Amino acid sequence: MMKRISAIVFATFCAYVGYKFTLHQSFVNPYPVVCDMVAEKIYLDDKDILPWKRTCLSRSHLVTPFSPKKLILKDINNVLDILNVSHLEVFDSSEVKTIWKGESLETGIESEFVDSELVIFKVHKDSPAEKLGIKMGDVIKTINGEQPNPWEAQSQSGAFILERKGQALNLNLKAADIKRTEKLELQKLSTKHAQIKIPSFRAEFFKGPEWSEIQKELSKTERLVVDVRGNIGGNFVAGLRFLSFILCDPQEVGRLIHPRAKTGHIEELPNELSDDKQLAVLDRSREVILKTFPPAECYKGKIEVLVDGKTSSVAEMVAQALKEFKKARLLGAPSKGQLLVGVWYPLDEVGPGVEISIPEALYLSHGNHRIEGNGVQLDKVLYYHLPEMQAGVDSWVKQALD
Image (cartoon, helix red, strand yellow):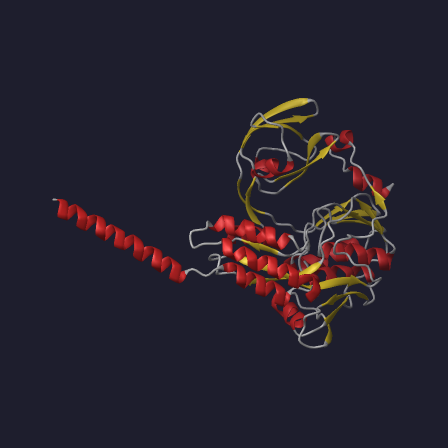
């Protein structure tokens, strides 16, 4: 009997040793890969990147084949944060799905604090919140008995207590997989005034008959509020197509500076919405000129632009160009100041579906304004007024037209 037990123990030990040996043999430490890739491709000068690379490589000694994936991702992002630039981050597959497809598990609520009250600013179409009748202007008092915040309002399931016109609403809200349409939303404010909400500059919304129809409608207005609050950017050509409609004549609105390009080539970005074709131009050019295109329609009225702390990337490019070429007022809150060209690469060393975004080019506007780290040149800070928001009146739009 003892011999049999010993044989089982010995076999188990051998299997364990074999497993550890196989794990060690297949393990690839992701740090050297990340450190080398970032140092080779990022737009920063060697004098800035080489000290960081040494720090990055030193972290590789802390990783073992048994280190949890989440811990590795968190630590790599902490190391990347040392460089203090945007568009430099490692994402797992679920985050990539949310960013590029507009899909996530959420309630459909977007909210902000106004005078210490969490006010709902937007309810997404076909979301759990819309299906329960939740509206813009509702105030969220508690979520599961706790003080709420915007992130919990967007993603948390449970018991929501809302206030609407002095009445309490008790709702059981469950987050679900939703797809944000993020389509352009045109709203007539009067016979002469209009607002266009641009949630993102995703390529599919700036082509075809729907985009043509929006241009025709906007051409009829004398004053336009361009609302890019919450817009985190998107496709450069999509942004240029919108600017083409506003600026009318082709204009060079800015340049992408690609310091680590293999050639000194300078090229205009063509009117192609394909990300791959845009990256191909960047890859072979030291400078890429961003110039608007001859438009089918032309807007000749007055422009006001609303930006906030979430406005970033291509949305900042558009806002700054409207200021420089149309003398549009930029109103609201300081923008995020994140306008670099991030290129995505697979990072299989960490796991399937993991990708890293590396900023390879810097944007300078026509007026030589560097948006990265600075944001757009804001003309006036605006504040929301609680009674107006509770009544469903957007305070910033009202102030923009005053």
